Image 1: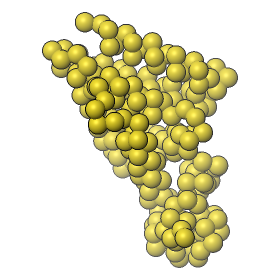
Image 2 (image 1 turned 60 degrees about the vertical axis):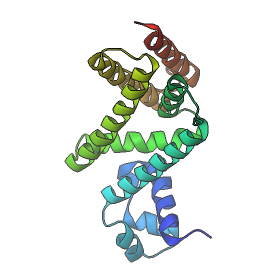
Image 3 (image 1 turned 45 degrees about the horizontal axis):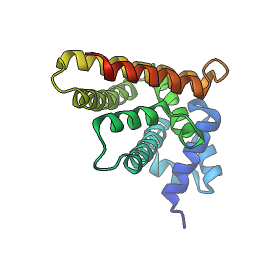
Image 4 (image 1 turned 90 degrees about the vertical axis):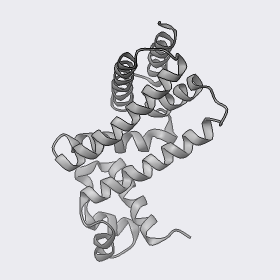
Length: 190
């Protein structure tokens, strides 16, 4: 049986995906979850709290998918490719996370606390990418690896967004091909 807090979170996520940040309200969440407005306010005192909880849920799902894909004995290259594939956000199982990420990104452009949270999490992802890139070719210049990780993350951000909102211009197959070309280049250059 689903708990009330999980029903609320599921309702928040469904509304964010269907209507975006502006379409979410305490009343809509309460109606969708079948609870009182007070119950929603108890768990989520603000819309930003709703978005934060939704992103935390998407992040946990990302971590779970990644753990299932990357065995303990995976090489750095295998782990890097899996992380990048997950960040690309393609496929129906990842669409919700991609929509939530875009909603948070839009909110971050006008809300300083959301911007700080987004920046912290993306620094962590860039650190992960830099660590994996560095591990694929020990001895690389750390500042160069850091720049490569930053460029890779920017590419992933752009491809994920384009694939989500402009699928005619950036179909999944094209996004995957562009990512593979970039990774192949990064992994073979001196």
